[in-house]
Image (cartoon, rainbow, N blue to C red; front, side, top):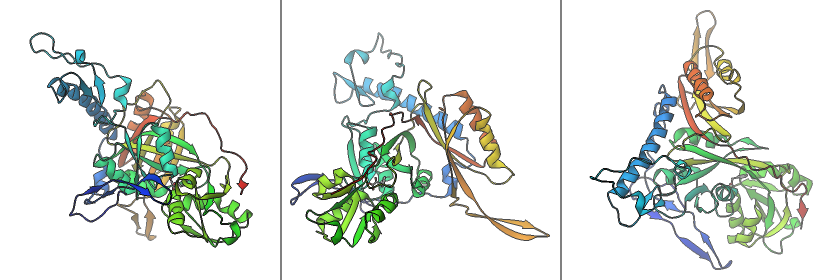
Amino acid sequence: MLTLTPPSSGSLNYRNRVRPSLNRVIPTRITVKCGYGYGFESTNFGVGGSSRADFQSSCAILASKVISQKDESHAGGENNHAGAVNGHKTAVTDLVHIGNDKPLPPKPLTITDLSPAPMHGSQLRVAYQGCPGAYSEAAAGKAYPNSEAIPCDQFEVAFQSVELWIADRAVLPVENSLGGSIHRNYDLLLRHRLHIVGEVQLPVHHCLLALPGIRKEYLTRVISHPQALAQCEHTLTKIGLNVAREAVDDTAGAAEFVATNNLRDTAAIASARAAELYGLNVLADGIQDDPNNVTRFVMLAREPIIPRTDRPFKTSIVFAHDKGTSVLFKVLSAFAFRNISLTKIESRPHRGRPIRVVDDESEGTAKHFEYMFYIDFEASMAEVRAQNALAEVQEFTSFLRVLGSYPMDMTPWNPSSTSHRQH
Ligand SMILES: O=C(O)C(=O)Cc1ccccc1
């Protein structure tokens, strides 16, 4: 389990443990002991900087990295017969020099360079918050089918694991069709320097889990992630479960807690996979109030991907403004005039500057809340209309950051089953 502890040590502990009762190997969440001295002040977010320039330079850095990695391969690594470019095996013929030590000109980027595979030559490692069986783990599997999912005990830790190269990607739930935005996670996006490189929408099908032999009538408590409790509230009442609700960090963690503590009076709301992993019975399934319950996750990486125009892309930005009237209206117009659809707009209190005091000699003083605005729009940063829209937005804002420009999840809509079953 990856956890945060005060600076000093520096050890990493990632192991598999066997649960004797379940006779199954479940990866333990990893624990990393390191400092957590991030500069969280808004000045560290690049206030006043040109995010378009930032974005473009990031892309250039990525492209030049690919090329320099090729050069490193030229220099001859551990293997004289084949080199690796971004983790992809390269045939020896690509690496020979022509003539007088003249290196080959750099090869054009290919599709595999756009989302670089890990340099360690193994599976992509994807960090998520929660225990095995959590929905975030399923989202990691949907986004990166052959990846190794790394459970972390907090989101902060999942972010750190990518920053410290323990993982290659982090998966973060950002909004739900019933509960709306997961605000804390938007704050995390701003506090860290990771880039959104993809999104997945996951139909979430909740089950009510209890120890074998336990019936609904024995229960005095239901535990789960707050989002899961909220998404099942009406159904729980409808099936007569008017018992205490308790929030825990993740759904699968709730299932594990019931199993390991042999709790006969407590049920967990979690996935069917969690029931299997922790040896629990499914008392009722499909208990989400909305059968079309979907959670959107974003994937984060240290480097941005190079935006393209040959498939639908989405771009996520965050901005703040100091003063001026109708700023939000002007920002929205920058997109509307260019026919760019917005898929999301969200405001969050500005942590660095939560309050603004306005003086008026005749009226006195007033306090206003200050906000950060998050917008997702349907265009790629490779499109001129998106670049122009952002150039305009920048004129009205004191801070602007592109969180990422990434392929939209276009998987066909496949809603979960429409009825819940009780057992
Ligand atoms: O707790 C989990 O399993 C998560 O991945 C977070 C979550 C909770 C409820 C719905 C979707 C994601």
